[in-house]
Image 1 (cartoon, rainbow, N blue to C red):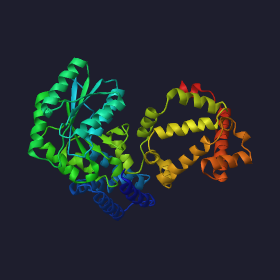
Image 2: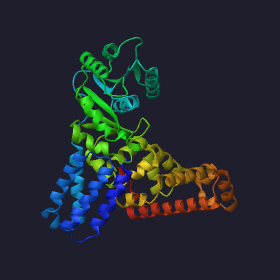
Image 3: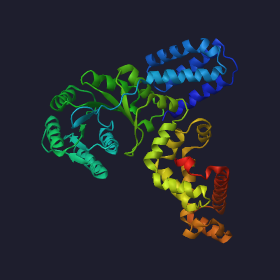
Image 4: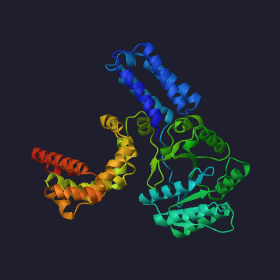
Length: 440
């Protein structure tokens, strides 16, 4: 997400931080580079102009000139102004009598059906009883896709044959009321472009069921056209929020920066991958940090909480600090790391020096190393995983052959394991072995 823009901005910030004092000429040069970087990232011209003007006004004032670290102060200003441009976070509205209805609208191919599944998963995890509604009878594939997602999530799906979308929506509402569902999510039909018949149909659905939320699903990869699409829907349908999909595939990312400022419609969710887990609640400050290459610690924690078994994590921590850490524990940690998502996305969320170090490693190399480590551990016998001391030369050759790696790779893994075990031993001796300090 935002790879090219983040790289450009970090280069600009690095040059600023190298200078002890900043002259107005230094600030002007940096603002020119930031302006160009944003325009190349497909941010709308008017948004770029206003953003740069606000940053420049603050950057040449006393706020920067009197700062101990002027370059770092400019970075702080850019972060604050970018967060302002991205808009205030607006949570999903789930107030009112049940069932509350959420209508997803958008063009064909924007990702409405997948988003419906992701949203259903998220709301169910919050204790809601969700009904998915296949309100796109024109595309049998869309209905079947929604049913498949429903089966995967164990979420009920409502559909009707030979009925119009407004009739389907009304029938679904009756089913939700009778069935005790708290939320229904309607996956509506799309078109290749905004047209009158589409808008009339959506207006008819809204009249029948009066949804609590009407969310426009927009493909971020279409760049500035996403802003035009949002404006077109807004002119005809009362929208309450936006869902930006395919954020993981857009190296430019400018639409996400422009769209709130231009349309005034709040972004509520970001789709960051194909997995049903990859739907993020929109947070401007965190997104701003990621755009500027500062990482996203909160997002990283949320991924970990979603993927990691808390009881297993507790047991592993106890084993580590008691000196019983084995390669089986190491394999379990790798398994939990993989549950958090693609390694490239995790690296993208690392902050500070860890993020800078991660940027020196390509996601492909990191993924390859992870697979190599897993292959080596899986080629060991249970005894070898539990007691690596038995790994003599012949065993290491056998493991390398079995995992399709080199003896050197096996030796490196064993070395890393031993260093980690020494670290845990030092922590234990320093008093951190008292787990009450960690778990209360």
